[in-house]
Length: 71
Image 1 (cartoon, rainbow, N blue to C red):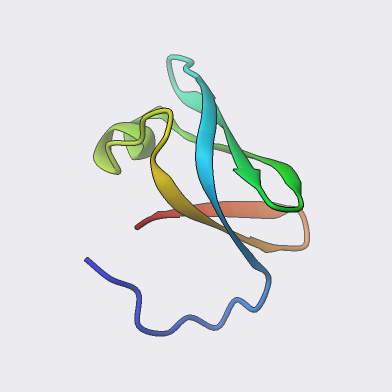
Image 2: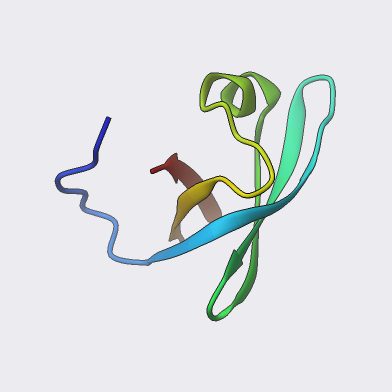
């Protein structure tokens, strides 16, 4: 899968630094050149995206929401 276009302008490329798993939601810390960005996403999404420490991702954010796209 590759992202060809997206309407979210605020995005930081980075690597997953830490995942704190919960039963329903998990915290994903992404290390970017501008600092750490934390996203709270469903644990099912962590598993579906096969996110692991060191995964290359893009943190997409708008207002108070941060989404994750695996590269």
